[in-house]
Image (cartoon, rainbow, N blue to C red; front, side, top):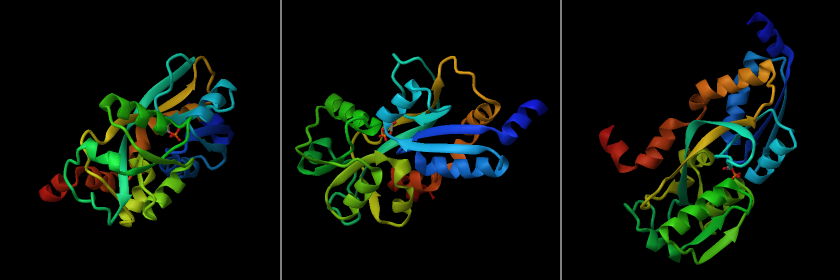
Length: 234
Ligand code: PGA
C-alpha cells in the first residue's frame, strides 16, 4: 500500500469528462488534488463522441460520461444518477404547472445539443419512445449556450440537472414538472478494457466511486425535482 501511495504522490492522471459532468467533476478534482498535490493532471472536457474517440485512441486514463456503447471494448461502472430535466425561464407560462402533458411540449421551441452529444441521444430516444414530436428546435453545442439561451427566452432546454445547479440556486431557470420527466440516466466511470491503470488512476477511480455524491448539490436537485412534495414535507 505504501508503494502504491508513493506512486499516487507524484503520478500523472489524464481524466476526460463529458461536458455535462465537468461542473461537479471540477469540484471533485479540486478535492482530489488537495489530497494529492503532486499529481499532474490533464483534464479534458468534450461530448460523448469525443470521449469515445479519446478512449479509442488511448488518450485518457479515466473517462466520466453517460452509458458507453456495449460494442466498444470498455470497462464501465455506474456511479451516480443523472436526471435529465426540462429547464425554462422563470417566468415561462408552464413554470409551476403540475404534470405537464408531453403533448403540450410540441408548442415549444427546444434548444437541442449537437449530434454526438450523449444528452442529445438520450433526448431523441426518449421522444421517439414516447411518440412526441418537437416542431421547433435550435441546435447549440454547449450546455452554457443552452442555459443562457433559456434564460434569454430563446426556448426550453433538456439538460442534465447537474449542469444547472447554480442557475437553479440563483433562480435564473426553473425545472418544469412534465410527465415522464426526469429522464433517468446514470453516470459511468470508464476506461479501456485491459488497460493497466496507474496507482493514481486507481486511486482516482476509487475516489469517484465512493465520494462523487458529495460534489453534487443534492439539496437543490431534490427541491427542483421534488417540487411540491419536498416543500410540503419540510
Ligand atoms: P454530452 O454528455 O451530452 O456532453 O455528450 C453526456 C454523455 O456523455 O452522455
